[in-house]
Image 1: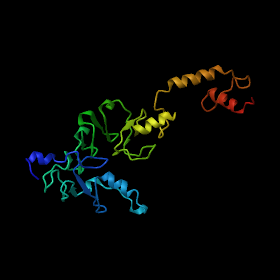
Image 2: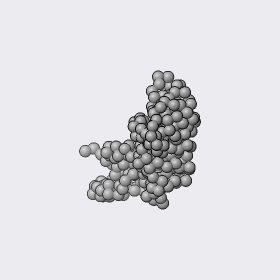
Image 3: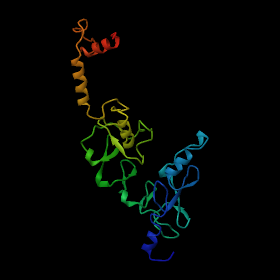
Image 4: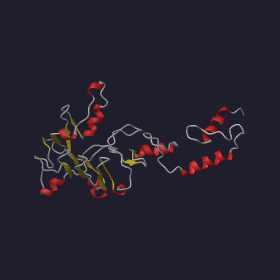
Length: 246
């Protein structure tokens, strides 16, 4: 390949890759010895295998070999191709074996998470109790739930910790995908699917319900009765409404 060293490094930048990443290399999956554009492509392909016992996921740290997309040379994991001299990824993480040419994502490696994140290191902090990186706006401004990100989204059931989709932290401290959260709200579901606590301010709704209850005149037979469980007239009113013959 002709040109200066810098020209060789930049050759083909953003011109190769898959729907997940723009990069100039592919990875050889050590689990099945097959070559894929990235680990997500591998996981999507293997999850569709007819035999459930053949389905598996690629462990990013186990990758040992990559294939240059420019010259098709297979080689040990490194940033620069040993044959043609191109940068196989403008961003490269030797720990995660991760490459990406789209540096506008603001990649950074979090040692506590053990994986690479996007969005800019200065815009995120690592919460030790939640065991994940959160936006700096949530520092001292969120309810900590131990390992809150190390579980599956309660709506779509995709694992949240290394998901490519944006996530949100609800008032209760539990997490889910932003798009799943928005869809849940559109369907008039206002409580956390995990703990059933309200995810938005419901004080106005509770006030209207209280006003409606107070406006209903209790029949004489029920007026002075109390609920043994919570010592209120609301439960008695609800029972009356259920059994009343209109």
